[in-house]
Structures are given as C-alpha cells and as structure tokens.
Length: 246
Image 1 (spheres, one colour):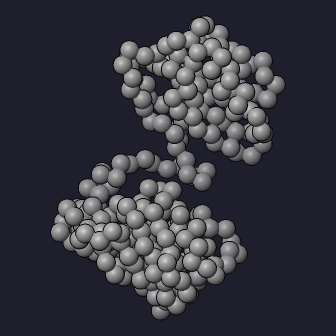
Image 2 (cartoon, one colour; image 1 turned 180 degrees about the vertical axis):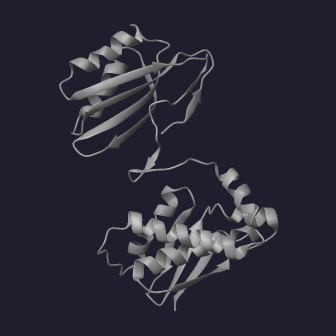
Image 3 (tube, helix red, strand yellow; image 1 turned 90 degrees about the vertical axis):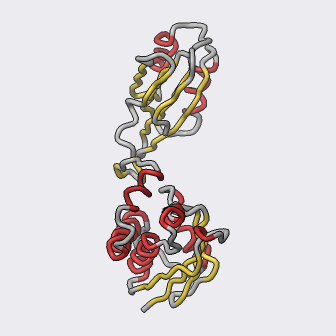
C-alpha cells in the first residue's frame, strides 16, 4: 500500500473500489483505466471474504476523458458494490486517504520507518532487560495472532515459514538452518537491529533474541532461551541465533 507519491507536473488520483472477490475482477477494473490512457502507478487489494477493496494510485495526465467520467464506468459493473476517487489537492504530490487504517492480517498497525524504530530502541540500548522483554512480548503476541491453533512443526522449512512474520513486518529475512525442539539455529538476513549494533558498537541483537524466545515459547508450549551466535554488525553475512529449550 502506498503512503504518498510524488511526480512533477503529473495529474494524480487515488481510486478505491469495493467489489466481489472473484476471478477477473481486478483485470476488468484495470482495463477500464488503461483503455482511457490512465496509468496505474500502484495497486493493492484487501480481500475480506466475498467482498474486498481494491486500491489504485493512478496518473491520469494523458487520459482521453475526464477522470470522473472514466471512474463512473465502475458503477455499471455488476460486481462493483461501491467506488470512490480523490484527485490530488496539491500539485505533483498525493497522500493516501482511503487506505486507513493500515492493516496486517486484518489487524490495525502503525507504520514506522526502520530508522525511527532503531532510534527509539537506541534510547534503551543500555537497558538490555527492557529490550529483551519488549521483544519477547512482541514474539508471543505475533505467535498467538498469526499462527493457527494445532499447527505442528517438524521440519526446518515449517518453522521458517512461521517465522516469515518477521519478513512481513520488515524486521528481516529468517531461515531455520537446523531444527529440533531442543535446539535450533536460525539465521536472519538484513536484520534491522544490526544497524543498532553498528551505531552503538555492540554486537548483540537483544530485542530479536527476546522476540524469538517469546515466539518459540508460545509456539511449542515450553520455555526457550535464545542467544546470538554472531552478528552482522561486526561484518558477518547475517545474524545467527541459537534457540535451546529449557
């Protein structure tokens, strides 16, 4: 989902269509725009069962008809429930208005830049107990929210898939390279916390250790201890964590 878009000397607009969730809907809606010279700069969908929302950011500078006339075509499509559009207020820039609130797994989220989050955590860099507890809380919460009940994990690839929530949230790209309930090795590439280590000359991703402890403890119903074996902040290719059950 786009937050804003800047394009000099262009006519910009955002369009939201609430329509039936079935094959071909997105193609038809997109074709209506392209047939009239309207370029789709960004597109995202939010399916919510039989009906979903489709968001377009469009550049209609070269449109062969007024935007209002083109968009009104959607009202003639039987699968469209409602539609809205909003043109830019200021030249060359538009901020999203319809895509609120932002969601992840149908839960409202607040979007914060990695740099800002790191700066926030850096205020507590000497409070490792606090950082670890904060991470643990988030790990437990994410496991309870995003992992279906009754899921059994028996392979590294299966645990990697569940930990993909870290990737979805922008924390990093996880991979479980060794797995057993007693001991697992987890590597995380592009981990955001390594930048905190670089800034503070430390090589221990305390927040992520806590996150993994909370996630794994909740998932397997037993306590885990997680320690960082090595860190990307000191030149390693990625961060590596060892998780052992207590």
